[in-house]
Length: 108
Length: 41
Image (cartoon, each protein chain N blue to C red):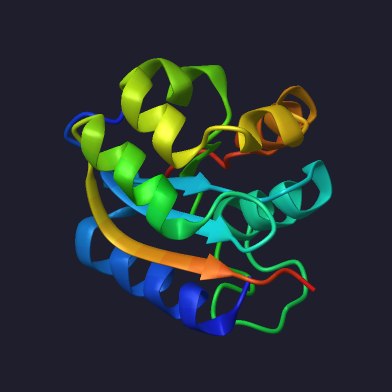
């Protein structure tokens, strides 16, 4: 995850509190989705950015997860996501992000 | 699930873009507080 995004996420978590935020990913494969999810849950795994060591435990989903799809009106979904939902491996991406979501550390 | 939530939309160039995620979030009643389209390398 690029440093600008990490800075923004850290700032927003400070402003609003981590419990009020939800991160929605658009990563193209399970590997990149998992790394992005790990960054906002457990901290930057590369230890290169502002989220290194920051266990924010943010709620995180991929836009292709069923819970997200169910929330979006059909016409908007078709216009914005459309064929990408068929091209990308939604089930594998969803599994990867759900596994990282399950690792949210207990809130103190 | 998205209604009345504060959302960080992190799209990717080779997947779903940030603006596309933002449009979905807004249509679902959420509020986008940050959006970006990254290039994963």
